[in-house]
Image (spheres, rainbow, N blue to C red):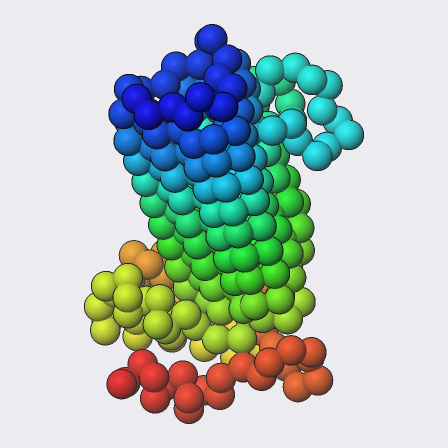
Length: 277
């Protein structure tokens, strides 16, 4: 184990012999760090944090500190981190608020510099949270979502898989899977690039496009749009989209219309052209 002599490590911490720990690192009590992790200089791993294998915690990052929540009573709560995550400079991840609750970070996620995930967030796998993006408490982010730089996400919001938030945007409503969100609670388009990179077949991409058209371009109430989609489409990823919408407690972001602030949305013709490319 390579531990710099200036590191401060609590005697109850369980650290795999392959972990590398840099100068001035602080590791508090009841921390578990798995094999092949690297903790860079001046990082802090706070009590109640469990970390899997091959994670990197860069300079000044703080993992598992007390939540920024007035309801926190100082009782034990936790931060659970999977494998192969990267936490860049001065990123912050806070542990759960309620006693015995937890913040959960999955596998292969990338938190860029100055990003933040608040108490009781649940982050899936292969999520990117870019520089300065802020996730409030109890936010759920599903697999392969992309939260761009300086985005802000209200507490209890859900961000669906393979969705993308445009830089500087903000949400207090749920973002359905496969969508590009922009401005304030607005959907601009489908995340076409993400679908292609995710290996979705042309048939599935076409089905998602058809569902998008019904949901966002036919001026239907959400319940009526769902009913029409269920009658006409049976692709498993479309079913995933419908399940997400039906389980939403905050409601979903609406489609951009003329006069809405922010970047314009793709026209139907532009969306069609990209899908056929």
